[in-house]
Image (cartoon, rainbow, N blue to C red):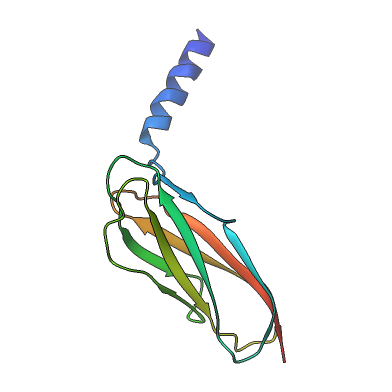
Length: 122
């Protein structure tokens, strides 16, 4: 009986969790800029594939701080098509950095997480 209640609880609570967006990132979720000069902005592009059956669009992108700027096209991404997010990092402070980016897709409450990191040299 205890196992039946546990199995039912796991099934029920799994249904309450928000679903993941149907995307597959085409590269690692973390991009390492390596050593970069202070005060010179650097950019990278994160590319994803829509693996769902409906079109998606990027609803919002939030970043760790004002030094990280996202840019994306506000277009529908059909199933089995690619979309992208350009990230620019402008380093004011010297030293190691590790910043998060949260990507929200339409209809999905849980964000996809991306990371950038590197070392800023003076």
